[in-house]
Length: 138
Image (cartoon, rainbow, N blue to C red):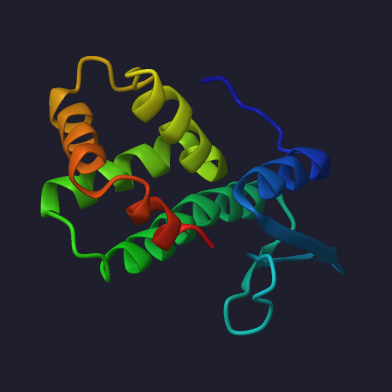
């Protein structure tokens, strides 16, 4: 089994990629989405398992927040599922990638053979246009 040590700079780089903030004080890690410190904070011990746990939390929390914002949209269930998969794959660059790769160029990088995702995204583009993305952006 290959092990990888997660350094403090690795953790902070990953936090920046997910739009989160990480503070390490007295052997404890505090992580939270930018601008939402307090109730949205997540705490773990500052060791390898704690750092790995925080990285898993970044992904789960980001995906849950996106799904909650998406639940208020008046679009099909297939389109919602496709947007959730696209968002999970591309991270904070998801809107830019969807606009330029998918909608402008017809390329859905990472989902070339997943026809359910690509057709749902293309159908969303053809029926709702950019309005749906404007309403989802933060």
